[in-house]
Amino acid sequence: VHVWPVLLASVMMGIIDATYWTTGTVLSDNLARTNFWGSMFLPFYMLPPVFMGLILAKWGVYKGKKKLAEIFLLLSGVLLACLGIGESLFLMLFLSLMVGVVLSIAWPLVDAVYSDLMVRMGKERKHMVGLSSSTVSLAYIVGPITAGFIASKVGERMTFVVIGMLVIVVSLVLFLVT
Image (tube, rainbow, N blue to C red; front, side, top):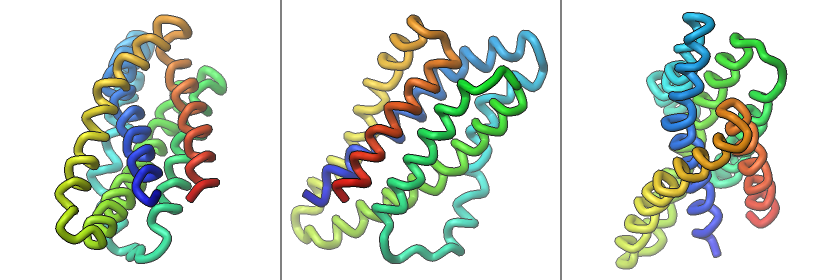
């Protein structure tokens, strides 16, 4: 009962990451054809993990990590959905940066929840380690296939919007059951 929400949150974050590394690279290349800054779509997403760990370490979250991770996952979905608003390249870059920021906060929170669960599991914690590792692997199997299929139907930019909508729905469900 306590494990499946965090597993689903991990899968969703992995799907977002896999979407960036597959469809995001194509979108970045397409954007770079019209403007140099277009090539920065993926780097702006990858920049926050470099410095957010230091900020998050000083934050000191001890309670409510699962709910907080779900809130940041929901926020990432909203930001992804906002990529469909307008055609502004700089808005897209800003949103990509912000998705990177909120996921850079959500990942360590989810990892902390896994750690808490493993401590409570005692001898059975090896199963939790396997489950947590397999969620990211599952996301990197399902994510590119899903993103590629969606991109073939609606285009690269709108793929992020569709993934964002999916993340919003899943986050709201997780938030209600947690």
